[in-house]
Amino acid sequence: MKKHELVTPAILLDMDAFENNINSYQALCNEHGKENWPMIKTHKSSAVAKMQMDAGATGFLCGTIDECEMVHALGAKHIMYAYPVANPVNIQRILKMAKDTDIIIRLDTVAAAEMLNAAAEEAGIVVSYTIIVDMNFHRFGMPVEDVVPFAKALAPMANLKFRGISTHPGQVYGCTDYEGVKEIAKLEMDTMKAAADALAEAGFPCELITSGSTPTFKEVVTKGATTVSHPGNYTFFDNIQMALGVAEEKDCALRILATVVSNPHEGFYLFDAGAKCMGLDQGAHGNSAITGFGYVVGHPELTIVGLSEEVAKVKSLNGDPCDLKVGDKVEIIPNHSCSSANNTTWYTCVRGDEVVDSIEVDYRGNNHKKF
Image 1 (cartoon, one colour):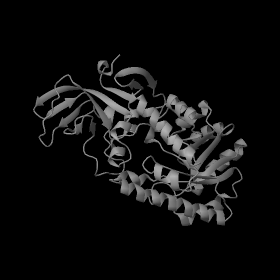
Image 2 (cartoon, helix red, strand yellow):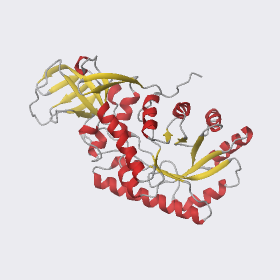
Image 3 (cartoon, one colour):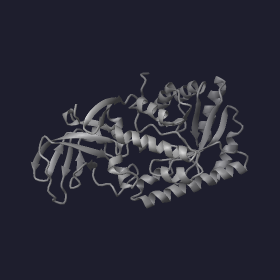
């Protein structure tokens, strides 16, 4: 089947670009002696996680307990949960995996540590943790000067094992060019080195120094003191990564195939793919470099000016001519591929114009299990 014969909307996965993305990022980790534990909230797929393992990923960073359980079932060597746990049900799910897997929790409050330690003591299990360091993103974590006191506060908790430090440079998504990305990468490296040095001096040497984002990956993996990298969006890339100068159009593996269903007047089109395919993201933390709700491949004159749930409103804002007509197919690179991935059940795999396979997105949504 040719891709233009597909029902629309469809979420396409360009397998040549996709495989190159996975392999090239893994090769950089290998070259610089870093472990790759990708963040898998991007793709939500056990099949994709298996491909990352086959390429050389030695662990995973997970955004949900479901994702932890998914890679646990795949036999991942290391599983890191990106956030603290404070729900007793979730703690028990973590402890169940910790019986036979190296699972690491990130912590930034004594209260959450006490809950986890008490449950681990009752279960007769020791759970590993890293301390979340805040590198001025001001979400989770603590400033460098608070890291040693926090490690000392948790030291008496016999069922928790200190393994190191973690951070996430989320503010990079507010940058508008690659120069800004490099500044955030330098802050990331400087912050983690300062925290690791302070902890080592206080008698808490870090086995794990984990950090990462797709935009800062290449800077940090080649220069930083991190031992583990956590790129996520690198599997697919998207319009935001292009705006940051991190990826080119050819690298963007995930695309939305849509049909032009209306052309009510010159320079104005309606496509049959809306917010439920592309999301409403124009940069998770604000990004003035993003215009519209996605990039229409081959039509730089067009801007996606609005989305309803199933329809995109598209205009030629500068009055530049456009040769699209009703019935034509278009490909759209979404602003944020993670959102598009979570809104589909299948990736339709293509090589060139040929449809070659499909991959299930089997861990999308909030709860994979029915309680």
